[in-house]
Amino acid sequence: MPRRAALAVLAALTPSAGRGVTPRSLPACRGCSVLLVSIDTLRADELGLYGYPRPTSPNLDALAKTGVVFLDAYSHVPDTRPSNVSLFTSQYPWVHGVQRGGRRGLAPNTPTLASVLRAHGYLTAWAGTPDEHTGYVPGLSAAFNAVVAPRDWKRDWNGALDWIDQNRARPFFLFLHTWSAQSPYMPSRAAARRFLPRPPPGVAYSRSAVERRAARLAVAQARRLLPLRSILLHPGIFLSATPRWDEIAPLLDDSGRVESWKVLDHAFWSQFDLRRPRDRAAVRAIYDASVFDADRDIGRLLRRLRRDGLTRRTLIVICSDHGEAFGEHGTWRHGHGGNVYSQALHIPLIFAFPGGRPRRRVPGAVQTIDVSPTILAALGLAAPASFQGRSLLPLMAGRGSSREWAFSRWRGNAAARGPRYDCVFKNYDARPGYPSTRPSVELYQRAEDPGERDDLAARKSADAAACEARAEAAFANESAPSAGGRK
Image (cartoon, one colour):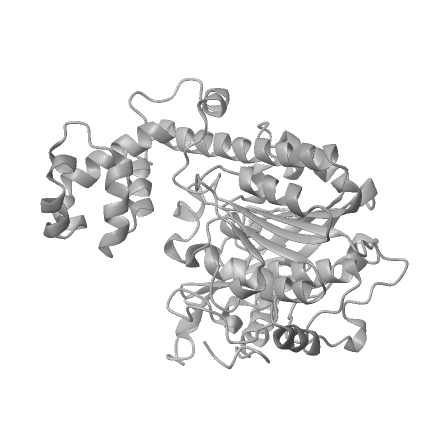
């Protein structure tokens, strides 16, 4: 980073009201390295530490016993790009504007977790697919010293492990984003056998099987998916009795019509009839196996850190960008149908400090924008004035309970989750253009109804109205100090 840019970042830091200052009584990790892992599409209740009965997460469960688990952490949007940008900027997606149909990148000079750490001498690295789908966008990407692109977009952490080995002598910040649990689910055979010992006949779930199915589908629909020129230039690919996905995928990506991963995704989902209980159970079991693979890789990473003595000076944070739906509220997957229910937005959040202290399970609504301010506070660094989140260190120290709210918005719908109630608003974005149209309000009591199935709005109308008023106040201001105004 040029010296002038580094000074600009430091100038953006304001320690007013004690932001980023860590009192002695709060958890601290001054000078520590930071490992921030985001497991894409991981819903919180898929893990043993959040009560899931199947053994999907032995390594994360063990890590949670040595750290702080936030029981009610929520993402703002069920989509990777805006969610990861919110993680780094500590700004709501409707403020930073990097959304579908919004900005392609951040406003210039927007402070981020990575830029602050780099300005304070940290080596910074992004380990994961470096493209706009993961949030690696202009305005954010410049804050990283290095990019460690995986050889296998689903499961390849070797580059990240090597980078840690090469840079362990200095304080580092490594963001590791993995697609292991993201659709299309393609778990290892060993994991699949563990959770789906008797798959439905003909179901493709291994990577090779899903790719073969995708190749056949791409050939059958070549005239729709590809320009005629691409087909004519590669007749051998499309006339082969056994078309190869590794030859077809680059043509799809280069065509500009459809990305290859979307064809792969369609190949996986189109083989299931989700009206049938057996198919629904199979999909969930394959997802379980995918999560188990991600957890296995987490275990490998943690063992490497322990072996090299790095856990003694590394703050480890585990989170996700969003969850996943499996038929709840009539929706499947995370981003479909404006899904703002808990299944799509309730995410794991674990902070593990060196020495295994503090250890606590913290209830109460927290949100993605709180992660970066908390990391900076733990390191003893001030948060930029543009950060909208708060430090969670007081909650880690057991100082009171969270009385804050978490807010989400996606494709016209919205949600507000407070100390007691979760509110879901349908057609929320219709309000500004249609004053006579009021959004429908659903009210759920989180402790008794974490799946948000029993709508209390009609029975508790005053509570529903209060929740709606709180959401209106939160969504009223869509401009940020450093983001150049509205999206």
